[in-house]
Image (cartoon, rainbow, N blue to C red; front, side):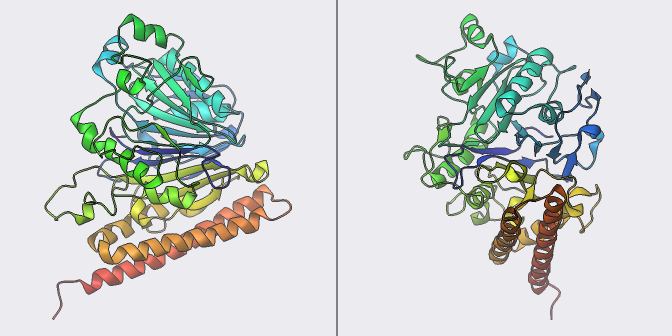
Length: 459
């Protein structure tokens, strides 16, 4: 993965409309294609001996305890990059979001660039073995302490009760915070954890982290421990690339500072939303590009670069919203919402996570272009829609809403059954994929018609 990519969104169970926990991340890449797949990894398919491709790390692995969903790269020549998923214990994990660090901590604890672990490895090394979000933090923390990492990353875990957010610190250290039940977190590509209480039951970290801060005089604050201040960056790049994304989401959902500006460094880490959050609202902010502000790229002249980096980009690979529900049976609790491609032109679909297989249009993504794959279909929509955005936008929004309504209807019908077998959940997912492919293919036809009317070869 390229540096400085992805945006993460987290929500505690009292912050959502139905009492679900949610961890969400849109995965980005460079200005090139990196096709994605949606798969289920069974315990028998989990490697017994793991070898990284981005470093010399290798290790024998214990037998996997749980099957899990994942969205790996279609071409695994550079690594699995499993990205995000839910295991059959109803524990979700997303990995990773690139974050920032500073020279002070990197001088003390350099990255392990030889045989450390990183984004390529985390999900595969952790998710098949954990039965709670806390266990996820603890297992990944042990791995980071033992092996180190070669990059700065943020990772999130959730189960029915808790949401945890972990950030790596230097090469071998880490810190994690439990997101308050009534709060959400929007995390762009910077160090995000702010105030940290070492004694609180809602925090975890490397055993020697506090001593490290004191020994090397790392804390510039006059009181307490603000980890963003201690370990993070405060660069000019943050002002245009990172801070504005947090500002925009907080301004839309509430709970932030009323006097905040897009370039502010000290925006809060966790916020209580004005209203309880829905998946639809989360999709809206994760598809945002500063709509209704002067910073929207679509309001800029064609020859002018947008002032701030937005969440929705041509570089979006996929958006997963990992929901663990508390109002259904455990077999139905995990929902791996998924949308491939640029978020402005895709549609989110609620796939059951506890299944044996995934729908072919999402599972069988090819490295080369094929409109039969959802990944490539959405990229086609984005290529056309971006050129005629004003006319395409309402069509894309209506399509996404229609897909949401139709797939939610299928989900409700499945949930209402007295018993739902794994085969029935798998079949429901196939139906949802068919609905999404049908609606998005119709949208493609509409965008082609729009583009054709604008052809210059007319007389």
